[in-house]
Image (cartoon, rainbow over all chains, first blue to last red; front, side, top):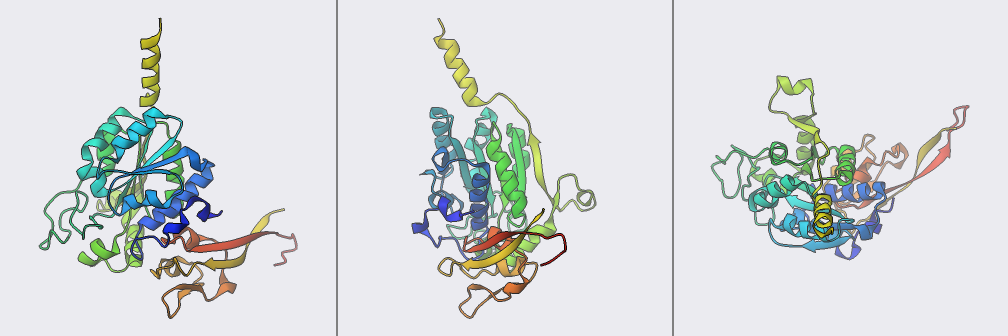
Length: 266
Length: 78
């Protein structure tokens, strides 16, 4: 396939650091969209602020680069006004769950047909490596030189608890699974959350002595197991990846259209 | 008859490559390496099995593995 067909080539080479996992997400995303056969004019990317949010500028879809954490609110507006469009919201861990935490849980509760892509690199890369709500206890950051004491969110449990009807997790090491889960998340009729563990070799990696981008990728290979694996019972430290929730509940735009029909019926 | 995927050539965009070395590490056949300018090059093209993993994992979207599909003959010719 021709990846460049989906890219705005004038903005390349992109601004992400060498070895940044966000580029792998971009790579998988254009392949997933190509695999689904969705036309470029039917795709919308709405993003907030941060390294991850720059992804919407690189794809040749309709795109909105909006306020920090508020991308889901803008996306809700886009989706409600034109429900036929496929709306993807790429967010970083801080953008999605700190600044935009409230928008995140309420979009999940409404079950609006939007794909939330949480690119979790466990730090605020763009502003210089501060700790985020997904950094976790014991990690180091520029704002936690003696290590972090804040417990982290579990994105999957949070999204499940908030009512998202499709919840999945994978890593940038598992590119084939990333492509297939992106396809599933985009195709799902309802609010879908896909957490992608991504590496930030520049800040999170350097502060926590995780080595090079390749070392960090290998840690995703060794530190994760498929959902329901026996290894997880022996070693609770391992992170599960795969589909956690996949159910069908009334979708928000459809419910709204029904409401309009009911209210205007004579 | 089954069709087999074969390598045509590697197209590596040197302008986009940032030399992170991920493609070099993931290649199952050790085909790629970084040159003196820290850019990926296909140093051992003959070993390539056209799995296209490097193309799919490249964070800079700088690699394209051009492939062709050839008929796999029953006699086992290569």
